[in-house]
Amino acid sequence: MRLANDFRFAYNKFTMQYSPTIGLEIHAELKTRTKMFCDSLNDPNEKHPNTNVCPVCLGHPGTLPTINKDAVRHVLKVGLALGGKINPVTKFDRKNYFYPDLPKGYQISQYDQPLVLGGTLNGVRITRVHLEEDTGTLIHHDNNDDNDRKNKSHSHGQKSSYSLVDYNRAGTPLMELVTEPDLKSAEEVVAFAKELQLILRYLGVSDADMEKGQMRIEANVSINMGTKTELKNINSFKFAKDAIEYEIKRQIEAMEGGHEIRQETRGWDEAKKKTVSQRSKEEAHDYRYFPEPDLPPFETGAFDLDKLRVEVPELPQAKRARFKEEYGIDEKKAMLLADDQKTAEFFEEYISELQSFLPGAKPGTGVDYILNDLRGLMAESGVNFADLKIEPEHIAHLEALIKKGTIGSRQAKDVLKKMFEIGADPEDIVRDEGLATVKDEGEIKSVIESVIVENPSAVADYKKGKAQALQFLVGKAMSKLKGRGDPGKLKEILEKALTQ
View 1: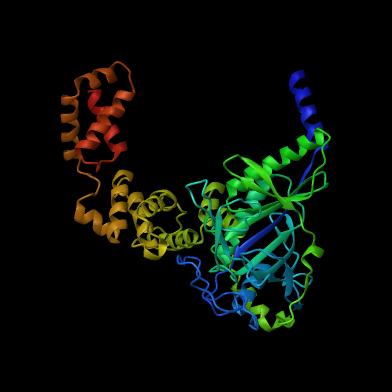
View 2: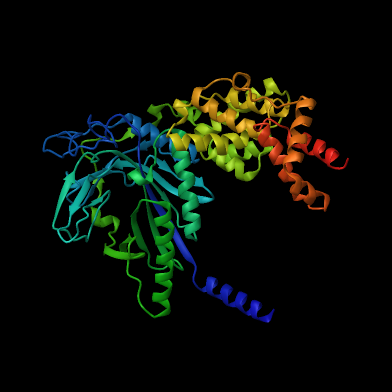
């Protein structure tokens, strides 16, 4: 007991001595038809390099940018969803730095008058949400490595034999959300980023697919609010967790060893499972921000904020709470349902349809069919909700057939699979396939008599007190009935037959 108390004291002393502080900068590419400041297509799936480009996004001299109003609306909607303050007047600025994937030699961004100020998410204070343009993509070919490396972000410090630049992504509308340094662990960072990803998808402003580089995490990590390092362009939740945990450990070990923490940008090396230095960290003055001369300031009131507020749907956190309270769903199922907007919509339609078959019924087996069986079939066949043949009404009707005893859970699995394939009503499938539960006692008794005759050793085991033998015999009877028996009824009749 004393050893446990000593350990607890040492642990508490350690956590009090070294307190991680983390702030985030999260970038998300926005879903718009065209790019941020020109009429080139914004197509993240374009495979041919330098196809969706024009003189504006390539930074040709004499070209003039124009603002993508849909991108502005998207960011304003995010701000409203997060409870932020919409800046009455906003403007764009030039952020000056040179890198090959930045064709103009500067990035049009926002500095001192962003679209959104403040807001909260998961208890974390949001500093600002602003709008800018994305960079191009560098493709590195290393003669010392047979595997070409394609980097969806800046690749400072990366040695390669030669590099190619794809400007398809250059000029894509990019939202940046900056938080206060309120996060204390890698787990909190991942939870925050996942919730933001869900919100962006609910709002329809971004697919936020991290594998495709549509959402990228940058974390500013420090210990005891000391010198911070910036972990740059992390494109998976796992990498974010691993990188932040490593960086916290690295900084604490450096402090324990009396070494200075340098302010720098570091990247995550997945192969080596460590963060690596990339360059010294720039300050705002290094970018020489100044107002974008080709884009005048504008008033956000022109975007009809009241209409945008109405367009903000019920968000995941509120939906989870309502599912638990209104439908009696447990927390895990509520999370799984709300974590995908289409699944949540399908579920609510199922609930509505269930009332027409079983008035007053609470959601039952249908929830499990939606979360497990149906989504499993969809994943296996690559079908999404837009192409789904099953209607929510079908799931509700299937549940009603089970509760009325028309079919058992075993037959229901077969019916569901057939529903998925052809989109027919479950009652029609049960009739056409002859899947209804056998209720004729004469037929059931005949099956049981044959099972008893064919399995004398199991019968003997049961009579010796081995309860599992009864389940074996029930299984044999179910097999003879091709899954159309009622296990409870079969067990009852078998017990009577075996005691005679």
